[in-house]
Image 1 (cartoon, rainbow, N blue to C red):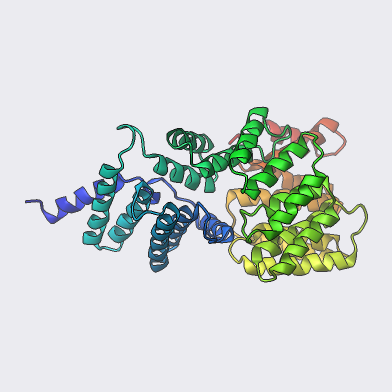
Image 2 (image 1 turned 90 degrees about the vertical axis):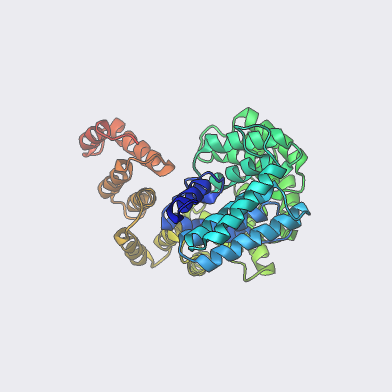
Length: 437
């Protein structure tokens, strides 16, 4: 007969062999977990959202990682219920990940009998719904793993590979193809050349297959506009549909606002965001969208000083957004500092906010964002180019690939090549010795 220690070892080895959030090497920082949790809340829990089960599974895992065990169990139970409603069946391969999560949760709670019960449920499901071959997972598992990794913005190639495998096995699951295409396109977010032609074509096909997905429709419209197509009329029509959609970060609102900003007008983008907020005055996501449009107007579209009334509305909305997102408003605080810098009497407040942010213990990626923004503020709002360059150097010195690091390096290279600033030799030496990520 097996000893208690042997039994425990066998249980742990079985748990480690499961496919679920606890075995997918998801070990982000607390900051990242809190930020992701906010993003998942903003997707909403509208019935009919085909990712609802996956959302609850991930929220459960995040709550576990943050130490909220009861919340974790509640979300895992909600995930199981969401899958049952969406798939219109009491069981199926879509529950393998969920039961795996529950097996791990009960193991961590010290309830080994319940953990083993969930392990048995996983084994029964895998017998009943086997994967196509020994070395492949079931399509449902590939899809959930891809979607989850995509939310952590890591392993882009792996995400694409898993989605492709899932779609090949179950081509009728249009939402998998939609998410895969959006994931492919998001890799080009900061690209100067825009989307590659084959991805644009994949988006067109995905939109035909998933016509009700307004997020995809708005995203595709933006890509077409970037290629030079005239989209103003389509944008207005789509905006009307988005306004009638339930509020969600998947509704297409932010994507259509970006289309309005660049291809209709910034003032109409502000009006659209305010109209949505009037319809749903308590929705924090719409406050965030409205704040974003005002930031665009003040920072990017004001040749001279913007109207004080616009600045005051932007400040008030940003303060609301910061209070609505206590754990994920770092970038909004930078935006607010930059807005104060453009207001009539806000220079001292802007500098004070930046100094407070510079004192916070930040992760490397956040430091890059802060140093890059502070450098631009010093240059454009304080006319202190030398101090600005020092902060671009600080951003570039952090050996982590990002848009902000690349942007700071570009600025430094420009100064080095022009040789007009007295720091050019120091910058040249700095760039030569720069540690690559």
